[in-house]
Amino acid sequence: MNNILNQIGIENYIFLSVLLFCIGVFGVLYRRNAIIVFMSIEIMLNAVNLLFVAFSTYHQDSEGQVFVFFSMAVAAAEVAVGLAILVSVFRNLGSIDIDNLKNLKG
Amino acid sequence: MQTLIAITALGVFCLIAEIFNLRKLLVPVTVVGLLAVLGLTLQLWSIDPALDTRYTSMIAVDGFASAFSTLFVLLTLFLVLMSDTFYQEHPTKFSDFVAIKIFLLAGAVAMVSFTNLSMFFLGIEVLSISLYVLAASKRLDIKSNEAGMKYFLMGSFASGIILFGICLIYGAMMSFDVTFIKEMSRSAELPIWFPIGIILVVIGMLFKIAAAPFHFWAPDVYEGSPALTTATMSTLAKVTAMATLFKLLSVMNADIDSKFQMVIVVVSILSMSIGNLMALRQDNVKRMLAFSGISHAGFMLMALLSISNAGSMLLYYAAAYALAGIAAFAVIVSVTGDGGNETTARFNGLGKTHPLLAAILTASLLSMAGIPIFSGFFAKFMLFSQTIQSGYLFLVIVGVINSIISVGYYFKLILAMYTKEAGEGKQAVPLVYTIVAVLSIAFNIIIGLYPALVTDLLG
Image 1 (cartoon, rainbow over the protein chains, first blue to last red):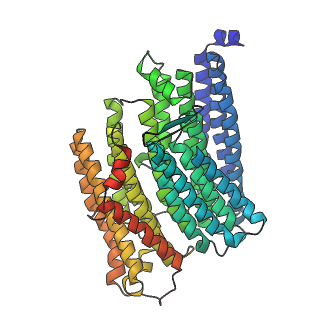
Image 2: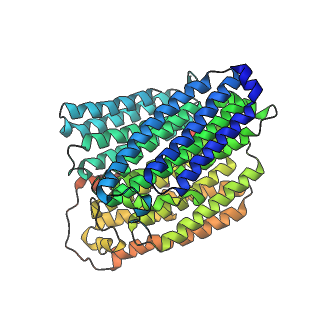
Image 3: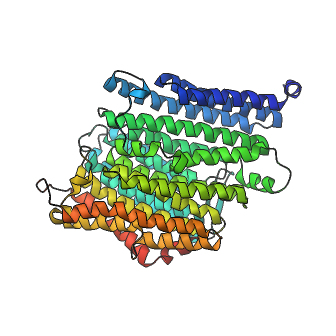
């Protein structure tokens, strides 16, 4: 495992994760469908998980992999709450386009 | 540690009480429980004032953590006291709301007593997820839905950024333990990931405290959420996030370099100015207090400039701001009830119909504006003199100008209460709101008259 990491190099893992993270960020900023925005947030969190595991192997240290479990559990809890909010928005508005959320401004 | 366990047990009790149909007992028992937690925290602290107990490198209970935990428990106590009357139309969900508030407190306590970045991350997530639920808790109200959705999207976006920052710090340091990170950050040459990681975590935390370039979600969320949730967000959550950012920076890199300090100065000036100028043209009271909260975040950020000795000043400012906020929101909740019209016009003539409530709201707004005998004045005074000592005179001048601007919109509400005629007839006000308002403004004035009570706590 460590051998493969040496051949590829930790930098490439960082580039991959940053790329995935940016895909997630741009998804949050530019997509208007709430479900796709949720998926983009998940991509952001999973990019970080990937990097955690890569660093964990790189350092020969298991703490990073344990942290991935925390962040996965937290992401699951977050999405559960988010989807619940989404359902109640859909019931009231009949749509999940976040451009329709315009009642509050000033 | 005992505090955290006791709070969590109390939260679980609230959930179990629902099963056994103990709704009537819920608030009294929770209040007694919170008082017990308060006593426990103070007692553990008073046994050994220089307390620094570590629990398997996850949590350290020291003076800073104990002092802020005490403040958080006190604020939650007020919020729980108000929730009995506030949620009386939702009897079936009532115990869930109280339990969520208690779990939120557990997250807040974890956030100020962490020594490991995983505990920090879990604490901030427990706090945020509880707040997403509370913000969207009026299920049939479109505004509350929208507030919850916006808060959720912005909050989890910020959490992703914080998580990425933690990951880069881990990659650079090989550990999540902050004491280890602090030692390492002084010694060897660091990978470039470490400063990037710190910057990402700070950006995420600025999102959570709603400081200037990252504040755009706050007014919408504060306006749409139920009034009691807005009270929670603008007092407990803001103070918690600020204390956590302070602790994070002070435990991880003891001497922040001058470029980073310039960033803090710019963010602080932007928050103060944008918050105050936007608040001038607001008519909705909750929205006005949201912008006022943004400007107070700017003031509190000044504490980061003299990070080694500003802990007690931050505590004092946080206590003054949060207690005034609780008092103001207790009056707002008792006037506007659960939703409906929240414009300034609703407060017309309150000085004649409810003199006590009007006096309390006036006092709390004057405290936020920084008028003497209320603690808000001494909080600003100490923070400003500390900032001058660290050599940021320009920042203090901007701060003073902003304090003067802020008087403008606070007085708009005060004038509405005392000079305009009441439109509607006199409405009954539940006793508990008045009690909470009186208690919290009394605490505010007491620490205003004896600032040493708070400032001596953290040496």
